[in-house]
Length: 353
Image 1 (cartoon, one colour):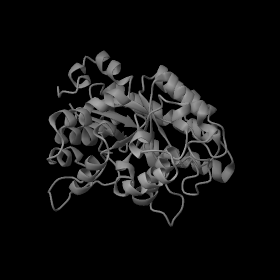
Image 2 (cartoon, helix red, strand yellow):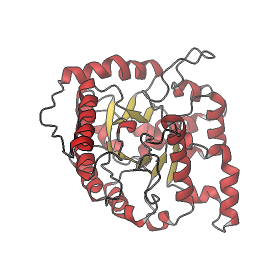
Image 3 (cartoon, one colour):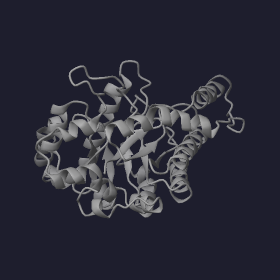
C-alpha cells in the first residue's frame, strides 16, 4: 500500500480560484470582506476535477491513498487580515472535505490554517479543531513564513506557536511545514521559496528546545527537506560544535521528511542520509512539476517509480516508507481508513498489504 502524505487539490474548479481573487481585490481596493455565501460549486464539478486529473494519476502511479490539502500556493497568508484568512481557509478546507466525501477510498483531508501576519494563532487552533473533530481531517499544513517571502514572522519554535502545538498534541495530528506563495519577485515560489522554507524550518527546529517542551509533536518537512539531506554534514557539525549532540538524535521521532524529490540520485541521497523511520512517501501531485522527464518517459512527480527503482531499501524499509511511517506519524489515519473499510493491520506491522 502506498499512502501519499503530500497532495494538494490544485485542480479545484475555476469558480473557487476566481472567488479568492475577488476576495483579495475587495479587501485591497475597498477594505471590505467578501462573503462566500453566494459561491456555488456543484459536486459534479468537484468530481470532474478530481476524476480527470488526480485520480487518473494516482491509479497510473500506483498510489492507493492521498492525504489531500488545499492549494499551498493559494494559502497566501499575507493578503488581507485575520478575517480574510479565516474565511478563505474555511472555504478551502470545506472544499477538500467535499472532495473526500465524494472519493472516501482515495482521499483523507489535511487542513489549511488561517495564519495571518502579526495575529495570534487562536484562529488557527479553532480551525484545526473544527477540521479534525467535525470534518475528520488527520493533519494540517503550517506556513513557516506567513508574510510569504519577507520572513517577518517569528520562527516556528517561538512560544507564539505553543497554543497551536498544544492543540496538535491534544488532537494527535502532525503538521507539514509548508510555505505558501512568494510575494518577493526575487524569490521563485516553488523552486526557491518552498525549499528555503524547508531548510529554514529545519534549522529553527534543531537549534531549539521545542521538542523538550512537546516530546510528542511531529512535524514533516516536504520536498525531501530542501537542502537538508545534501548538507547533512554541515548541520550535524554545527550541532556538535554547539554541544547539542548528534543530529539524528535531535531529529528523533519528531522531524520527518517526505519523498517529493524528482530525480533518482536525489531520492537515493535522501534514503542514504535520513533514517528510514523518518521518511514518508509523497509526490506533491498535482503540484510544482507537471511535465514528463525526457530521460525516463515518466512524469517527474512519479515518485513511486523513483523509489521502487532504488536498490538500497529492504522490503521492510520500503513498506515503512510507503505506508507504515505515515500510519504512525498520523495517529488518526488508521481509524479513518478502518471507517472506510480499508485494513491497515499489515502496514502497521511493517509489511506490505
